[in-house]
Amino acid sequence: MVSYERYAIPSTTAEMDRLMTEHPMGDAVVDRVDGRRISVAGRWLADFASCNYLGLDLDPEIIAGIPEFLARWGTHPSWARAVASPAPYQWIEAAVAELLGVEDVLAFPTLTQTHNGVLPALVRKGTVLVDTRAHRTIHDAGKIARAGGASLRRFRSGDVAHAGRLLGLSDRSPRVICMDGINSMTGNPPDLPAFAALAREHGALLYVDDAHGFGVIGERTGYDPSPYGRRGNAIVRFFGERYDNVVLTAGFSKAYSSLLAFVACPTELKRYLKVMVPSYVYSGPVPVASLATALLGLQVNQRRGDELRAQLWHKTQTLLDHLDKLGVATTNRSGFPLVELAIANPEDLDAVGRHLFDQGIYVTLAPYPVVPRTEVGFRVQVTVANTAEQLDRLLTVLDEVDDRFGFRRPHPERPS
Ligand SMILES: Cc1ncc(COP(=O)(O)O)c(C=O)c1O
Image 1 (cartoon, protein in one colour):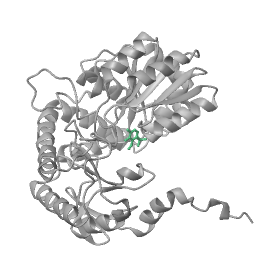
Image 2: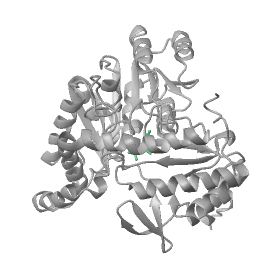
Image 3: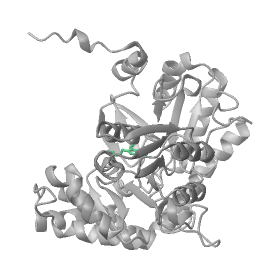
Image 4: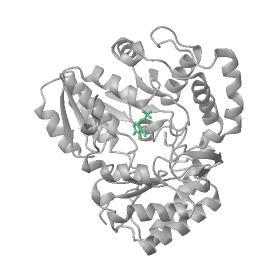
């Protein structure tokens, strides 16, 4: 008999385990969905934990378009991509390449798979530098690269000078600097032009994960329907940057409400990745329904995306303006629909979460060690599908949380 005692939960993750097993807002089962309302344990709540920013998960046009794809391609192709891919893959890759303004695109089921395969293939036995606040999946991919013989270093988040010093110290090429685009916790972009310049100066690659930005932020003309810019073509275009020395990765699982991810790169690099990335050669593809929602989502984006983004901006501003009035600083300086709030006393997280739940608001709790102890609190995400009434209710409940428990002022990541 194997003993599972060795798998006791370590004390560092005990709080997370407790929230997931005992708290109504952790590891929940959603029994019904009605617009951006969810029913958990028989209770209806306004969902502010969804990353379906453009509301495409509920879009009638997209939902109605799926059966035609299933009738034509079946439910699931089941070939490894290196063996064969249904044509919608090709259509999506071409459409995304055109949208971003890149030479080529290679799609994978998830960003986790993309990072785990693409990053080690790019780094080889060289050097990988990872921003300390990059998404966990990038850190893990860095460790895979290290196991393959690369040198792995971390630089202080957003600190171009620190990354530059580490680059100067490393003599092992290729060298790859990795970071989030729109950061998954703060909602802010990095100084992409400065990091791209650093990469070019050192002959390195800048590897960016814009999981959140893709579909929300995009190219800016100065006359845009919202400060997010146009077309949702992600962070490189948002900054008006070029793609040389920049490898952009992003996914459809947030703004596009679909299971699919991609790396944007020159065709020559795509050819290399197709044989070097294990998941392209050995793993199964995404279900046809996901290819359908990705493709139909791209079509909707072309026709209605800017209008949806303008609505999203206004809804998010309502929340941010209210927090300003309350004097609550969040990390969010960008107006992106992802707002992290730290509570005054980390010990109150359980009670704060229960209050939100009891008052009909569902958010993403952020316990330690998901965030540092000083930033324990919760994350609110706004989507186009959240109604004005839901937003009103959210603001009222945030006032109550502030009265009863207090938010941390200023936010530890954003000193005033
Ligand atoms: C910044 C970032 N990168 C990667 C991922 C993982 O994406 P996927 O579910 O496609 O593996 C997430 C998911 O939340 C994310 O926020």
